[in-house]
Image (cartoon, rainbow, N blue to C red):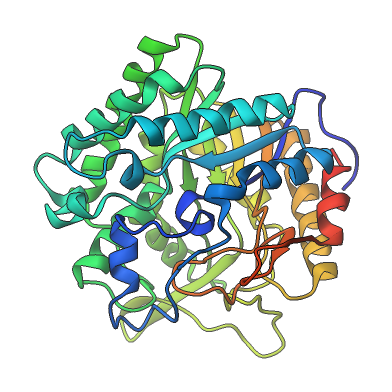
Length: 387
């Protein structure tokens, strides 16, 4: 990094409930994990048992010098059956908000991070006629516990949620590569986002509402630039356009994707020999986040940007530090050029369940799968001290 960030800059890590809490048995993803789909290498099981150990996790975060924590509320726990809302689960997540504040951590709370109740999926999920109405009832139930939460993310990576809708429905391939988001799900997600914001602000007028966009940095060989533009547009730009009236927009990016036209078809191209790959098989390309915030800023206009996720899956923590250092430098360069970036959340605090496998390790903290003991990596202290 070339220097420090502003004093009020959000500086934290991000997690998602299903990936760390464990035994989210009422969720659509729990059901999907127990199918024979080739994407699933293992189920989530106990995950990191963070449902019970969230205080320990927050202690690690605050102790390392971070000032912010992004975590999600699990809809499947809060509404286990249609219109049956759990007061106990709402109280649990309110305790997490209080616990973060007590430790000097500002919570950024996500209301939907990929997973929903099993009953919602069985009714058609985001492709059902009443999807928006069902989500609004959940938002109405959760809104009262969100006092002292300055930033709320309605939906994480809506374009990926629209892809997951096709994956769970059995209409996507194992990797979702090159697939366009389901248009019905996309429209429902945009409408749900737009309807959620006034509900939240009716309870907490000063609350800042946005959502997070997964940005695919597509690039092409010289002479095929139009391929990259056509690849990105259906996946992403519609969701950026829907962000223009938000208080902030989240940007998430990890790598870049090479695209081209092969036999008349727009497709992702394989990485060449000698290209460093991460444990997800992606190119080790830390400048991705700087590229992404610049592009999103050019699309959404004068709206503050928060990097709500960025990180790398690697067994070597020294490579994690190298990646993150270069990524933060790219963010600083974008800020120096006038992009209004207000915060950075590293993915992830813990090694966790990465949607089918525990093999990709993104965490600043390792977790023993049997005892659930936490083992901070050098990157935790390094990043915590570098604001």
